[in-house]
Each structure stands twice: as structure tokens, then as C-alpha cells.
Amino acid sequence: MSDTNRPLNFLEHIIEEDLENGFPKDALRFRFPPEPNGYLHIGHASSICLNFGLGLRYNAPVNLRFDDTNPAKEEQEFVDAIKRDVEWLGYKWNTERYASDYFQQLYDWAVALIKEGKAYVDSQSSDEMAIQKGSPTEAGSESPFRNRSVEENLELFAAMKAGKFEEGKHALRAKIDMTSSNMLMRDPIMYRVLHKAHHRTNTDWCIYPMYDWTHGESDYIEQVSHSLCTLEFAMHRELYDWFLNQVVDESKVRPKQREFARRNLSHTVVSKRKLARLVEDGVVDGWDDPRMSTISGLRRRGYSPESIRNFADTIGIGKRDNLIDVSLLEFQVRDHLNKIAPRVMGVLDPLKVVITNYPEGEEEWLDAENNPEDETAGSRKVPFSKEIYIEKEDFREEANKKFFRLKLGKEVRLKNAYIIKAESCTKDADGNIIEVQCSYDPKSRSGSGSEESLRKVKGTLHWVSISHALKAEVRIYDRLFTDESPDTHKDKDFMEFVNPNSLNVITGYLEPSLINAKVGDQVQFQRLGYFCVDPDTSSEKLVFNRTVGLRDSWAKIEQKS
Image (cartoon, rainbow, N blue to C red; front, side, top):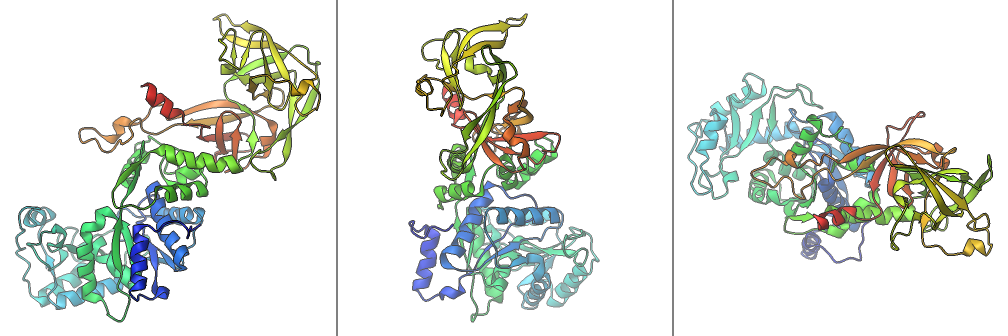
């Protein structure tokens, strides 16, 4: 999964330079550190592929560490979903870790900082602290509690830990520099009081460490060599290093934080907070809704792990944030499914066709190739009979010369079957065509070897035998947002751009070979697109999700608008 022949990205150049300067290769260690406060999305997939890809390239261990320091938002459900997603993408972690594993060590280090005069308990409100920190152009001012005695700070911090104070009453802050040009260095909060049960430690703790205090120290405890994060943490690096300076033993590996650009995806959002809002407001049917940019949603929609890994590799690692067109992701899944997905026939907007000269009550089972891209895929049998369904759009009473599908007086070939000719049609009281009467050439069966079977006609249609067809619920998914960047409008809420037509549920008619289709199975409905079996499928009802069409139809719509 790791292509060692491609050019190095800039992070790999950093690692190579460290190795050249004497860093021992066997000391390389990476980590993927999600917070379990939601499901992973496509943006996380790039980080997963980066860190685990580095592990594969350098034969180095990669930890899966959960940054679980906020019990108000974190749940075991999210931990389980994250592990499931990483495994599904094809990666194995060396060790499963949690920031909560280190709560006691972090607390002990914080006590040591208090004793050294490098941390203090602040009794201001959060609003007072925000004012006192100043602005990017104006230095902050010292807290009135900044110079509390070591003894008082130790006593208050111990009382915080013992649960003697309500939330917001006190906070532990690092004593750094209130005049720093980097506002993160202006006495950042290290601990706050939270009287909430933690998904692992329950109520053992009622003070919880902040991300900046936890992250670098966790990297150090685990001896992570290169701590890779997205660009929004670039300003945090100075604080990351300051905290490390307080605890690091020079005989051990000192983690190095480096940043890479976030890759945003068009026509979606990749913020856990915004994804959670879509779930909570009922816009989607859960974190794994196939319209979501979550890895769980993509999996349910029918995306393959290979296609997501290929997407991550294609967009690469950069130093500037970038908006990636979702059509590139769709291209990757088309490309992969084209190689592996069996071809089947299904009709989603049925029009009845009666083959008038086909023998009454007769049926045939015709050979059909499963996948022309895969020589080992074999073939299957599909039934043919007097009455079939074709797509409504595949028939017109009259049409110009560029219409190569079925029209009155003209011929088309039915895929894997016969050449038929439209003779007449029947309409309802409103003038809608409800049935087409055709004749067929009995000598034109595909693969029969007869001269008629080799006769060329310009159109080929997919179809299903009505008497053999399986009825299925088919969910046609489209992009969740009409705007390519819905969360970048300062004057509008991203929810205003929700696509009202992102889901269309229809009844389809499928060939009987799908009777034993299992959840997750991926197929190509010929001429229509790639589909997969949804978990809602039961013994009474087949449910298919459209993964992606055979071509980028959205681009055509945008060009017309």
C-alpha cells in the first residue's frame, strides 16, 4: 500500500534529512491521534494514509491514540467507529493508546511545574481571562492570581482534583509570557474542572487536561518521533515545544511536530461539529448516511478502501490548504469498481416491452459475461421471456438520427440477447407511453455464432425479464450540498446550501442473479452506474445504494447552469 517508488513528499524529506543527520531509523515511530467526538471523515483518511503509509515506508510502528480529554463530547461509540474505519482502510496499528492512559502522569508533571513556579491556579472567569489575554496587536496583562504562592497553588490544584470546586471556578495555567506575539503562549490553560463521567475513567477524575498540554506529552511518553498535524496547529508548535522542554529527558527521543495542509472536499463539509449538526437536525439519517463525507458513510455508499487510498495518494501532501473537487474522488471509485464490480442488469424507470412474435410461455437462460475487465470473473445466466422492462428514456416514438436507442420502425440489440424492432406503442389516457410492442429476430441471439447474431445495429439496451425480475428499493444519492464550498460563506449558514435532491428513493427491477446479494456487495448496473447492497436489506426487501454514476453527470449540469 505504500509506494516507495514515487517522489518523496516534503514530510518524507524531513524524515530523510533526520536520518542523514544521525537519527536512528529504528527509533522512528508515528501515530494517528483522533479525538473520539465523532466519526472520521474523508479529511481524516488523508491523515490515516499519511501516518500509516510512513509506517509502511520506513517499517516503523504506528500508534492509534485517542485524544480523549473532553468527556462532554466523547463516547465509546466513536472509539469503536474510528477503529472500524482504520481497519477497513487496510491499516493495522502497533499499539492502541489513549490520552486518558496518561492522566496521572500529566497530573504529576503539572504538580512539578507548580513547584517550579511555572504554573498557577487562576480564579478568573473565562470571560475575564479572554479580556486579560489581549489581542494579536496588543499585549496581554497578568492575571491578578499569577503570583500566588507555590503552596496556595498546590492546595488549590489538589482541591480541584478532589472535586471541591464547581466548573469554571478555577483553572490551572502555565506561566509563560503575557506579552508574547503568539497568543497561545500567553499563559495557556492546562487544566479545567469538568464534573462529567469519562468513557474510560468514569468519575475518577473531575479535572481534565487541555489538548496543548496533553498532546506533546503523550507523544513523548509514546516516544513518537514525528508528530504530524494539519496547518491550523502551526501556531501551536511553539507551545508544543515549550511544554516538552519542561519534561523531556535528553536521553530519550524528543518528538518533532510538523504540519501539512488540510485537503477539503468540494460539495461537502469536513468539520465534525457541522457533520454532527447534520445528524442532530435530521438532514441525514446518521453518521453513516451515504451522503456524508464520513468514512462510514462512504463505505455504506459503496466506496472501496482502495479507491480512498488512491484518492489520498493522488492529492498528495502539501503546505497549502486546498479545495479538492469531489469528482476526483468519484473518478477513483469508478476506476477501481470498473476492475472488480460484476456487471448486472437492472431497470430503474421501467417501460414494458412485449415481444409479439416470441413464443407464449417460453423462456431462455442466456449467457452473460460478469466483468469484461476481469478474465477470471466468469459468466452467469440471465432469463429472457416475452415481456421485458427497458428504461423509459430508451424509447421514443420519433427521434432524430443521433438517437441510437429504440424508436418506432428501428432496431436495437438487447444486451446478451436478441435484436428487436419497435412496431407500435400503447398510451394511457394522458398520452403517456405505457407499453411498446416489438418483434425480434430469432436468429440474432448474441453468441450463437449465426450470421444474424453478428449483424451490427447502433444501439444496445439493458433490460430485465418481467416475470423473473427482483423488485428492489434503490436509493439514488447525489451531492449533499449545491455549493462547492458551503461552509466558507461569511454571510450564510452552510445549511442553506443543502441539496434538496440529494436522495431519491425509487423502485427498481433487477435480474434474478442478485437474489443472494449480501450487504456490501458492489455491482455495476449496466449503463446506469455502480451500486452496492445497503445494510437495510432484509430477506423481504433488497436495498441498493448508488455509489456513483458511470460518468460525471454533475459537471455537465454545472456547465449548463
